[in-house]
Length: 438
Ligand code: GDP
Ligand code: MG
View 1 (cartoon, rainbow, N blue to C red):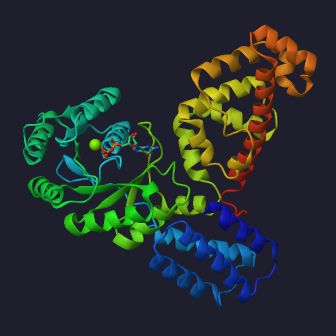
View 2 (cartoon, helix red, strand yellow):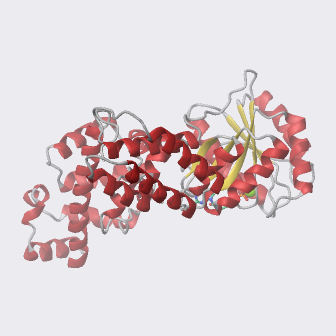
View 3 (cartoon, helix red, strand yellow):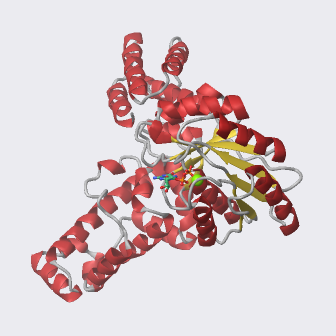
């Protein structure tokens, strides 16, 4: 979706003036792109009509070119389509806040329960996970293992009690032990069936959850929307957790879930790791879809994972183009703390266009090798990588016990990274001054 829209917008950007025909053509492309992304056709029609209405007869804002203005409109309407503002988790005035996770099998309920608990724990909350999936073999074990990994308590009563009883007892347990959030992981089926719905309705009736979050797999596109509609009819959902957005390049589900069901997307799952859950920001998602990269999310992530002083120092260096191999090593360590690199890079505007970056995985082994290579460089080489010629490469490889090809690859990655940093800083600097710096 992003690629296609970007092409269209690139064409628009070049024009100083746009006519109504230009707008029409651009919107035709947007329409096709949305349909291709598996967005519900009714939503697409409404969307296009709205943008058209607003575009026609609008005064041109002084600071924007007409092309930018259309992009701005599309961006605003996309944001609106996904709920406008970020939708926060409800907090109960009489703790514990009860969150019930529902959804089809494999959607990511158990993983998301763990991630959500982890997210809350990081905010100094005291979540309790509850194992209410008594059907799937090893389901209880799965959530217990998650709890152990995260150091978060898991309440379970085996598979002989009914989910209603388990949920009820869990809340009593939470009250006694001072847990302020209870996250109930429920069972799923491959398809929606009545027995499952009856069970979920019974649990809901017993514990009156503050939140009923439907977990849906973004990769299932239009199906995700249908699932959301059925669950919402039966359970009156309070929100959606959209998982596997890391694998969904089309964005169709994100675009139609809110519009069809009226339920806001509250969280997005961005990977298999337990910290890969983010509050869903419609505006950021819209920017991502339009190919502007999710700079805000990245900055937030960077702030979480980075040592602040180091980050500042690094930023200064990048701005002055003083970035050296020592910083590179440092940076790799920092980035590693932020999470899987491909995930971090996916948020950078244009990062997917830098060749070689995709293959740049930071694992322990590679990091050790990189460290060895960098340490085999002289001080002068580290600060002036451009002097590293063929014979120096040979010497460095020998000194670090690696191959010349390893050294070559690292030098290439270093250059790419430097390029990326430049891009990152320029976007960051542009931020705030002008919203649509395209
Ligand atoms: P459940 O049946 O709904 O409880 O689903 P699980 O939580 O067991 O997850 C099913 C699979 O999806 C597991 O392999 C998870 O690792 C994977 N998964 C869950 N969320 C995400 C996500 O956001 N991104 C990716 N890539 N995988 C996910
Ligand atoms: Mg499960």
